[in-house]
Length: 611
Ligand SMILES: [Zn+2]
Image (cartoon, rainbow, N blue to C red):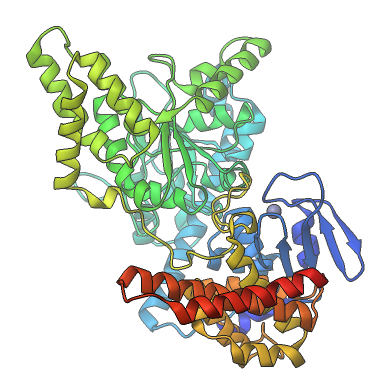
């Protein structure tokens, strides 16, 4: 993952970016010595354990374990992918970035995308100003006001109106130097059925610009203004820029709140998103259709591991959710479903009535979001509610439908409860339901039980858990052994004269994860300047680990005694591993290892008594 930029460019961006300024947008920092500290913007805390080193340009939280450089901070906190974070910082701090040599076809494609993007951008601002200013848009303004959508939120999302003429955008685009082919490729203009002429795709409609995570317009969704206008919605066609299955409306505005809240709320339509944001639910995005797609779950997985679906949960909607569940399990994303009042969408709920009614509706909506049920449980309960339970045949059908859904759930209390619930509702022998589920579980779907594992079972900066403070990788969740491994490496970096000797004595076996073992080798080879030439692009887990160790190195007191003590501790852990292996293999008694263990324990106790 080089992001397509040259390594020098990325270094220049890091050099130019003011990490204190970037971080200060998210938490108040106070100078203390050569560093700044403040409350961690990634987890809830009362006393500051978040530290920024302006010289090394690194941040680290001693509470939850997150850390990295300024680019990583923008990725984590503002929910951007690496290349986008680099570009955003480059723009902000005025750095020219160079791309790695592209092949001519790729370069051409990129330039074309950027040209089409500009066309969409200028058309979006034209539509928006047409909504604000044109007398022709009076009806649209009245409609939106009646829907309870204020100017503030309309402006934020760049909502506009397409004029009624057949060729406004066509003519404007050509005047601005775009070819017919480009206008067609952008989706703004379409060829007439007879194939002779071209005309504007969006006419007399309210248009919602659909943007990518960085806020670049990819396409439009357009809603009819008059009841007789068919169809009700017209969207940009699939194109080089616009992929409906992947896109989430509102992600550009919601990504930072999602990263902060540690949760995303998925609603159905454009006005639902607007209504949610207007009501302060700024972690809401919309799917570009009625069903959520696996691609959209993948997109969201980059920002959070908690997704609440506030979507129409009719049969086909639920089936789409279950398809998305497979991807979600793989990405360790928890999908839940909120029960909304029948037949009402968030836009109706949140924008009707006077101010106090709206506030009450917003509170109820939030409660529904908080009370959202796990998707499989929701699905099973809904199908039980819909089933004909009066006949044995109806109950059999319901059981047939429920079994595969429960079988795909990981073993948990929720799953046990659901099993009992199904037995009760179907008036079935509890053993029967369990046996059916067990038989199903053996025969298929191991993928639902074995989520993708990141290579770094050990410490990597918490990614999706921002806000929740529950980072699998946070220091709080590290084992004692992992903490000692990290502490010893940090001391080696802090006191290289002694560190060298310890790094020599340590082997891969002393470390409980491959990434920690690689970090030892890295420090051995780069002890003088561990951050120099660290290949983040090639080895992200290693980069994250080393970064954290370096941050820790200048903070924690190091001494040869403390190093020896940690070393002995890791040595004993290694001996324990070997004893366990001997016992597992049944290779006789590990007498010699037990003796060695006793000796190490004595030496460790000796150190502890002096401390
Ligand atoms: Zn923290």
